[in-house]
Length: 332
Length: 257
Image (cartoon, each protein chain N blue to C red):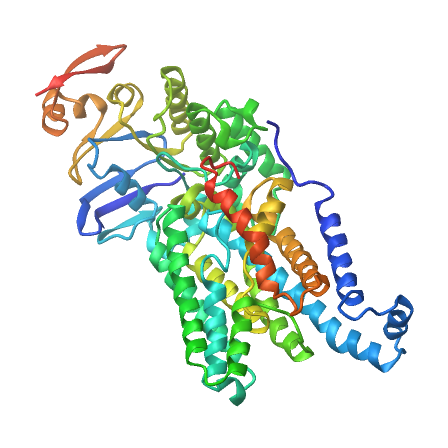
């Protein structure tokens, strides 16, 4: 087999998909808007209904799809590289559920009404605790199984916490709201949500993208990486903060959306030289495009209630997860 | 040129003391073999000398500076390390894998320069794996992979090289190639220390042997002085035939004592 290199069309293709997803997200939806009305809105005119739908509903939704999807794709790629485990991703490892639990706590105890930042901050904090706990539990163990089991334990615990609040919630409306954190959705989001997610995703991505070289060195294991001059303790700290802030901020606006971080790196990896650093940026672009397409999907699939985004991504992601879990030979 | 000095170092793994107060100096230009039975603390000793395990006592210094004050990057530029039985976690190409050896020299976000690539090719050539450059490292045979990993360590271009059992999984011909390579590296004024299990190779190639037993260095000196029947009986619990070939000792383990 000859050396693999990055496919020359990978980045152009991803950028094209990204543009298509963004355009699709603005043009397509439950209420059809003719291209001429759309064009009028885009050029600053248009009728009030079209303006309201496109500017106030579809544009923030598109922005959130790109931000959340990009963050999930990137953190999946980083976690897989850091943990040397192709099954790692924020939701499998419990980070997404933990962030959702933080958000639900903020809602349940009324902190979210006291200050706008309470919800995202609590989501980030609980995600940080979950990732810290995971790294402690799995420790220096190189076994993929230990890590996945620890992740499942954390995800289940956080899920149980959310279910508890659901169980104890005072009225059905509160229950509905809490439930949407479990399933993940980008329905009815506003620019306030975009403003919450944007700084978190930017900070998270900046912390994560800089560490590609550390991830490459970890191909040789922790000793090997340290002997190549990598300060693993600092790298681990950057990475935990990056995932917690980015995923925490993303989950704070979208709820827990699973499996984007798992699928995307797997789709990208065969088109690169398979080094962990090579999939970081492509996974971010790919995650943004995939989640935005999925979000267009839930709008167009004709169901009585709009399908929740997290439900769709899980339905798509679980088969991928199983296929890889069952592959005994490490050929990824 | 670099010297590494260990003074009374103590390493504990969990509660078990793996190294108990070993002092030794490693100098450039010498091929040093570290031998001893399984569990004698050989790997812990060299990991301590690289600053990869915390010391419970004593100190390690590289060229006079205490290793705890050096950054990981400083150590990495001075000392290349070839760990024991390394697992490769991603299916990288051989070229990409060996190029990891240049990491300690790269600034953040900079790319490999032509000089770095020349170092990578030189390392591939020296380890006799240039023809494998385009292959996937995880698909190689055990012997090929061992030599590729050695090339990765050589690509660092550090003045010191510490290897942990580089001969494991190699056939006799390639064992001789690797020992020739390590000796040539030492002759070019590098500091080379390697953990070895093959006493014959240790006797034939090394300028100096350090015999470890239960966490202590029980003998240190030229092969003929270290590999005595009494030492082998005491430390390994074996009876061995010791002969001589071209002025070098030849060791043949015969039986348990």
